[in-house]
Amino acid sequence: MDQLELDHVFKDKQMLKRLKDAKIDTLANLLTFDPQNLSKHSKMDLETCQTLIQTVSSLFCPNVAEFTQPKYLTTGCPRIDNFFGGGLPTRMITEVYGQSSTGKTSFSLQLLMQSQLSLGLGGLEGSSLYVSTKSRYCVTRMEQLLEHFLQQHPHMEKDRVLENIHVWEVRDMETQQHILKYQLRHIVEACNIKFIAIDSIAGNFRAVEDEDAPTRSRKLAETYQYLHELAVSLDLAVLVINEATAAMQNYTVADPNIAKNRRFTFPSKPPSFRHADNAALGMVQKGQTHAFGILSL
Image 1: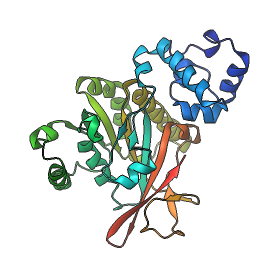
Image 2: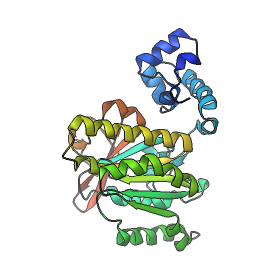
Image 3: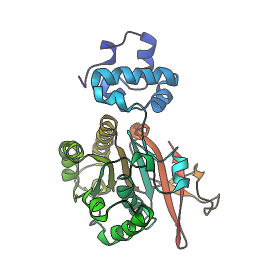
Image 4: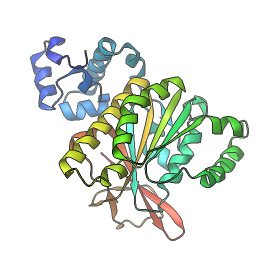
């Protein structure tokens, strides 16, 4: 079913041409898009795209039809939530990037707790998974953040919050690819995981020296594709952390502490998978405080 071409289901030649021009030729490929991004890439109106995704979802994966409108996970920071339209969306990948010591890991650790809140408080009412590829899980930092979290949400139980945070430490690309492809869905479904953070998504790829850049890029693209399909099918919020590698010219200043002429950097990633992200959140450090800006993709 996942390789079934669209023209086996739909007969509208103009619509099929627009989809194929956007390199969308199978049901599975179409379901990696949300209505807004599908409209942008296919140049079809939003209502048509919403109807199309609902129709394909009911044929390809009935459970997906329930998730046509994403939920939003609050970050705990109103400014960031506002820029994302309410928080980090489910059914999409959101990327955080920046240089070392700009708060990327702390941001992801905070969301491991936020996701456990009720829907009414901006959470997702589920467990969370933290996949670390670059260093050991920072227990000390997590305890500091947890103390502050419990002050803000005294109804939450400390032991329960910690039990609902699952941690994987992965140290090489082959292992990372294997667990994401063959083990991730199982633990997500078994443990009611609603939020996944990967810190960092490309670290293990950069460490491989016996493969050329195009091969590593292709494997990284496959990882993004699989994560996005998982997020769509299971209504997950997925956050990936990446290191800054290239200069960025156009961005929106989300924090008044950042000067208007401040330059951000953003990570290189296969352009064909830019559509899988909701937005990129760039973090910088200014003095002793952290600030941020957002690049919409």
